[in-house]
Image 1 (cartoon, rainbow, N blue to C red):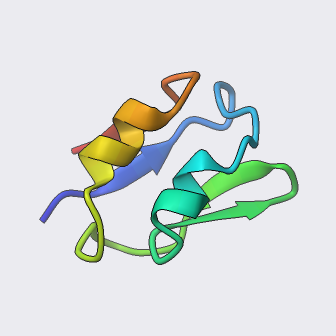
Image 2: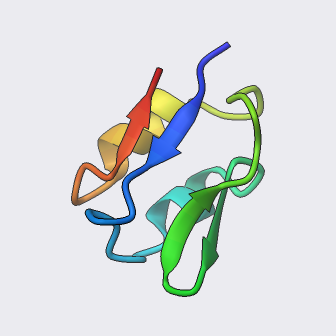
Length: 59
């Protein structure tokens, strides 16, 4: 299963990832964090493509 990662240096805290997939991403302290081990509930590659700064990667 794919796993998502967020680069804190690139994240601007816009919330797009959390709005698209709240079971995997959560905003805390102005930055997005991954809260699930694997991307099962959503299309994390699509979420990564939607990130305006490219802060999300999927392995």
